[in-house]
Each structure stands twice: as structure tokens, then as C-alpha cells.
Image 1: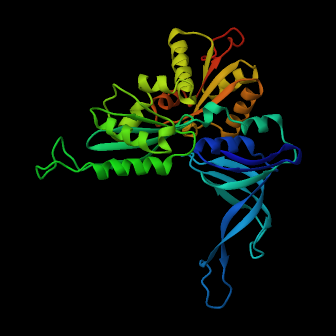
Image 2: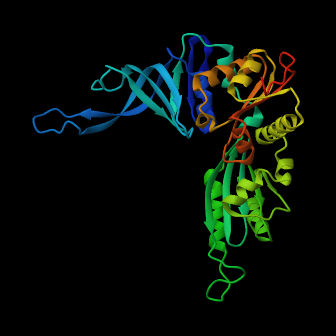
Image 3: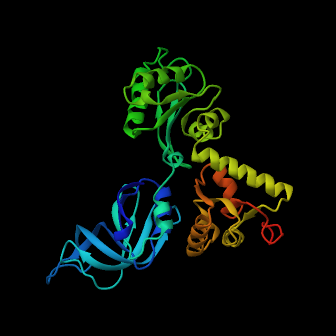
Length: 361
């Protein structure tokens, strides 16, 4: 999330949403009564004897919406904000009734609050670890997968095929691999931003060629590394790379590795019958209210588990208000699947709550 302006005393924040994690932050930040200002589109109905009532011109407008309700959709790709329009850049936009805005990554908006809590400011001050991004390349002669790891969320940017089959092409002649390598490099450069670490891995020697190209690039070479001993390529290779021990050593201070280690520890405690663990929303919320939660992991498909969205927001805010840490986990990764299997929410506790196993109360 890019915060371009934050004036708590005036209750104003101007920001740009960058990732699904940011939508979760917004869901926790926004509350009924706040005002959200952003660009939107509205259908302007034409008036006339021959105009169809279901047709109209869609126009771009800037609107200020007084928030009544907020909800994430099931895929966590958009945030729906419903409320009443209090201002609009086009006079033709009606202010009657309720309206909704859909907020997605890449969108700019301004938030206005009557009262800005310390917890609100904390949500907008991510750690250096949470801002670290990794460009991942899993490559062999036939296929390359390029992914972007931001926080604990992995996005497959694209895959590139070389057209080669084994050592030779279908014509029996050696395939020219240079166009293939250029496409991989172009994908990386189009995704890269200052501070990103480029990680190259894969079977055979092809990864060495790609790493050499990365090393020669004036931007990408600033931060790059090669991971040895990894033998997968393509999109599946990118997904597997984030669990590979060689990558975990490279990313040892990242949010992803911290989350992976926390989930592994939670599963160990559950298997041993230890009491310093809680899972499912009601149990985690109870432990959070007691100030017992050290780390809480939430799968981004938690609402598919019929979790109460408002109750979840209250629980997560309560945990952080009491010094706990909250992480959103990508449900497409193995770690996220483990959290999903535990009801979508799992927490490591500082101590047993009320002297009873937190996981079975």
C-alpha cells in the first residue's frame, strides 16, 4: 500500500491499493460513518421519448461516499463499500438512495474519519519485512514461470514457453533460445520495482543463463540471487519454490517465512495436545480478548468457512490492540491450505487461557 498523505489530526489519509493484503487492511480500517473519496463510474440515463429505460451513458466521476457497510468478496479481489453519496464531480449523479464502490488493487482513494485511532495509524505503517517483494523465476529449457511474492501473497505473473523439446526442436535443429530468454527478462523488468529481490531457480544450466542476463541488467542486478538444488520450472515451480529450504534461507527475514514457521509451530502444538494454540474464529477471538494471542494467521478464503466478517475484523483489531501480530495467508499456497483446514484462523498463544486447551474450549 502506498500512503501518499496521512494527517491523523485532520482525519485524512490518501493512499493507493497495491495488493489483496491491502484490501484486508482497508476492510479493517474503514468503519460506518467514514467518508471515502475515489473515482468511479455511473450510468447517466438519457431522457426522451425514444430512449430505452435500460440504456444510458457510463461516465467517470469522482464521488465522496459516506460509508454504511463494507464487505470483501469471496475471492478477496475487491472490496465493496456501500453508502450514501455526499459529493460528486458531476451534477447529474444522483445522491438519492444507497450506492456502492468497488475498490481493487491499483485504485487511489482518500479516507476521512472523524476520529483516527492509534490502531488505525498502525495498520498503515507496515514493517520493512512486509514491504519486501521477491521476483521469482523457475526456469528450464522448455518453460519459465515468473511470480511475485509480496508479504505472504503469491501472484503468478506469467509463464513463457521456449518451443524447445528436450535438447532439439521438432525440426531436428537447435532452437534459438534468445527470444525465450528475452521474454523472461522483459517480464521481470515490467514487474520489477526498486527494492525487489530477483530469485532464479530451476533444473539444469538454463537458470545460469537467465541469472547472467539478470546480473547484466542495470536495475535487476541491484538485488538478485541464484537458488541451487531446485528441480521444477513453470508456474508449479514458482509455487513450490516458496516452500523450498534454499529459498527460505534467502528470505529468512520475510513475512512469508515468519508465517510458515508460525503455522508449522501451531500444527506441532495441536498434534502434541498443547494448550497454547487456538483455531476457528470464536476460539481465537476469545483468546484475543484475553490478550493471549502472540501471532494470528488468517487464510484469505476464511469467508468460505462461513466466518462472520464483522466479527473477524473486531477480533483482528482486538489482537493487535493487545500487542499480537496478524498475518493474511495466501490460500493457494501450502501454508494457506493448512490454515484453511483449521477453520481459516489459527493463533499461537502466549499462555493457556483459563487453564484449558484453547483449541477445544
